[in-house]
Image (cartoon, rainbow, N blue to C red; front, side, top):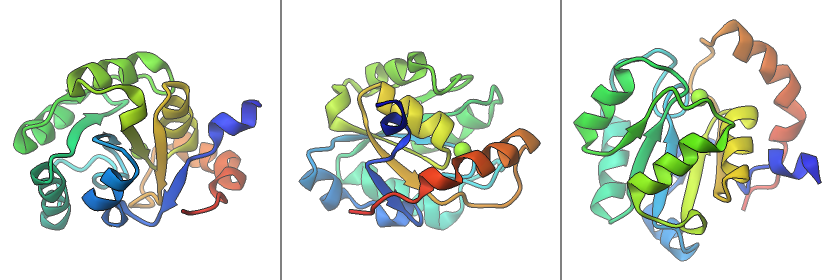
Length: 164
Ligand SMILES: [Mg+2]
């Protein structure tokens, strides 16, 4: 059913609820993570020390990470370089191309990877279409593109999904 592809497998308040042991218990070895309002505030140039520590702890635990952004800016490259992880920018989520590229970069099959993001119609829809496990997180900030603010109204009913 169409609406099913808009439903995340899991919903969390923030990235911090996602831990390496939990991922491994679910058979997950990699994460494809959205940038704006998931990893950092919209338009932000740097990760906070807390979020950088979260990324580092996952990487040290052997979880592979690829950042994916619908933006074209160099921010994705700078942040990915600082973490030493691959990235895909200008991703045009929910189209599958960027997710396929990210899976190639991770060198993992889709069923071992979770897509993490704050938006239903890009991150979750795209991740589900690409065959990933999908994790919806609460957006970090209220500062958003006007289009995103409109989309938020439409996605509101879909955010009420069961947590694990
Ligand atoms: Mg986002």
